[in-house]
Length: 176
Image 1 (spheres, rainbow, N blue to C red):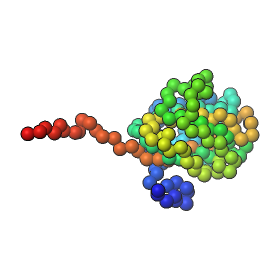
Image 2 (image 1 turned 90 degrees about the vertical axis):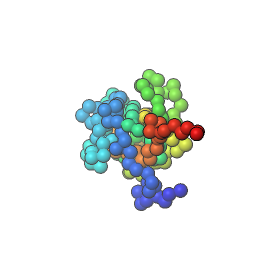
Image 3 (image 1 turned 30 degrees about the vertical axis):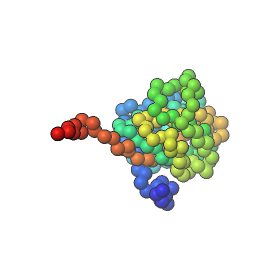
């Protein structure tokens, strides 16, 4: 296994933001003054004054499609101590999820964050459950203190791309 760097991310893992299909990203229950772009976009997410905030209650449902198949290794979720997320459920390759059906499916992984986790420490996922990921749905179920809204300063996904074979490029081998 590759050695972890000072950030806790393994050397062979890359920031997957370059592989996100940005036009397909959706976030349900976001405050439109504080959208998912603030937390997920690589140029915005390191500015702690920019954040994603929920609107009607503390829950958020974020759908992230990728433009190629990836393997998810870990994620970083950074947020304030009080309003930062607590229970995070991850779903691999589940489309068209909403608040009405999110509890109908078993999550691929559930992470319970402590306030200490919200400082930018990577959380390693159940790697075997995230081997051929075309999309990732992140359900923020609640926050640290039961506050009315949840705030997220950063969401960073780390992993690798899956090498796929281009079947059109293969030539048939004929026996002579």
